[in-house]
Amino acid sequence: MATYDEIRREAERRAGELSIDDATAAATSPEEREALIHELHVHQIELELQNEELRRTQQMLERSRAEYMSLYDEAPVGYLSLDANGVVIRANRTFAAQIGRGNAPLANRHIADFLAGRSREAFLRRFGALYREPEGKSIDAWFRADAGGEVLLHLSARRTDGGALRVAAVDVTERRRTEARVQELLAQKELLLREISHRTKNNYQTVLAMLELQSNLTDDEHVVASIDQAESRIRAMMLVQESLSETETDAKTEISRYLTRLLERIVSAFDPNGTVTIVTRLESGYADADTASAIGLVLNELATNAWKHALAAKGSGRLEVTLSRSTEGWTLLVADDGASRRTARPVTRASADTGLGETLVKALSSQLGAIFDRESTPDGTRCRLRLPPDAIESTSA
Image (cartoon, rainbow, N blue to C red; front, top):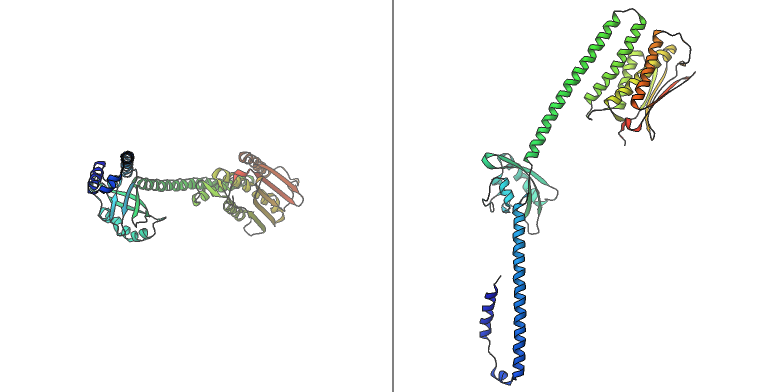
C-alpha cells in the first residue's frame, strides 16, 4: 500500500501534466475563480481526512494481523497446512516445537520427513484418503522429536476452498503412556483378583473337606443333616465367588444365571433321579456380591426345606422358582405342592435346623431391606421375598 507522501507526489506530477485552456481561464470571473479555489481546498481537506482514516485502518489491520499471527504461532495446538502431495505450506511455532524443530523453517518440506519410521508407511498409506475426505477422520502418528525421542500427535484436518489441508496436531504422548500404564495396572489387578478368587475357592474347599471329614466320623443322623445343611450354604456362597470371577461386569453377578446354577446344585443333591418337576422364570439383572449371596442363601434355605420337609414326603411333586420385577420392586417366589408345613411333627434336631433356617431367612431379609412372607395350605407352600427396586439392576432398564 502506497504512503501518503507517495500519493501526494504522484498527484503533483499528474497535475503538472494538465493544461488549462487560456480562453476558458480568461472567461472565468474572479468570483468564480475564488469559489473554485475554495471548492478545491475543501476537496483537498476531504482527501486528507480520508487518507488519515485509511492510515488508521491500515494500522488496525496490521495490529490485527500481528495478533492473529501471534495466536496462530503461540496456540496450544500445532497447526500446519499441507498441499495435495503432503508438502508443508506453512506451520506454526507450536507444531515446530512439538517435533523439536524450534524456529527451523518447515515450509516446502514433505510431512513424511518429520515422521518416525514406525509411522511413516501407515501415514502415507492413509494420507490420500484423509486429503480426499478429511471430515470425521483423524490419524495418530509418531514424529521424531528432540534427542532422538518421539512424540505421538493426534492429527485432524479439514480442507479449504483453495485445496489446502489444514491440520490440527495435539500432543497425546502422555495420554497414550497413561493409557498403557492403566492397562498394565488393570492386567495386574485382574491377575491379583484371579489369585484371590483361587485362594478363596481353596479356602471354601478346605472348609467343605473338614465338614465332610466330620460327617464321616459320626453316625448321628441329626449331626450329618446339620453338616449337610452347612455344606449347602457354603456352596451357595461359593457360587457367588465363581460368578464374580466369570462375569465381565465389575463387582456384579448376573442374578438369573447365578440362581439357575444354584438350583441345579440343589437338584443334583436332593433329586438326582428327577422325580420333582422344576419350573423357573428368572428375570435377568445384576446384583453386587453381598446382595447376590444373600438372595442365594435365601433360595438355598427355601428350596432345601421344600425338598426335605414337603416334597420328600410325596416322593414327587413340583417346585416353582420365579424372580420378577415390578414397579414396587423385585420378588423371589419359591412355591411347592408338597405337604403343608402346618402338619404336626415332633420337635427333632432336623426341625431345629429348620428353625435355624427360618432365623437365617429372616436375618437375610432384614439385611436386604426385604419383606418375607410364607403362605401354607393343604395344597402346598408359597414363600415370597419382596426386594426393593434398587436391590438388583435390571438389564432392561
